[in-house]
Length: 263
Image (cartoon, rainbow, N blue to C red; front, side):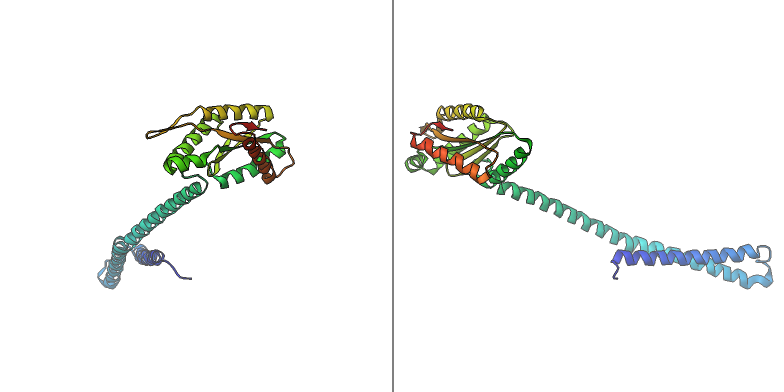
């Protein structure tokens, strides 16, 4: 077993102090055993021996103090600094890990949750709401003719449209709803504790709010609409089946003329 430098130094320090203590104890035993005769002329050897013991004890204590101040204390300070650096590094790595995890679950353009987060959250909601026997509403939204916006005005304007729609969705939903950008111009809302009537009313409010927005980017002023597919979990579907059903209803809304809700 190998000891750290500070541990070895501590053992040396204790050994020196212990030796000094042993010498002082020995000197005390001599002084205590013959206190009256110690300083008689014929006992001069004992007195000289006692003086040497006390000098040696003082020298050991001095050595221990010197060793402690100039060797042990610097080692302790170095170790404390190293621990401080390690702690700071650990905190930095932890914060970076959280940032990377957040970045992995967030859409960079809109600041919304992304497809990965949506997939995980939908599965968790289904597991939990299966246990408590409550409904879950799912809304899939796709912006109408969005490719034409990008082709006509450029991707910068298209990005402004996506950010405006994301802001509208955040404003129109509850704090515990999952609002995510699935990719491109497609968005999703997971709305727990909503039956079909409630979900349709919410989807209509969102559809009208998006249709009523004016997206302004430079000299460009755009109106945008969205088609929406809705589904309420039937308590038997998997997350993938639930999503596919809502997605089919979205494309039905597209086929029926866009800018509408299909449930």
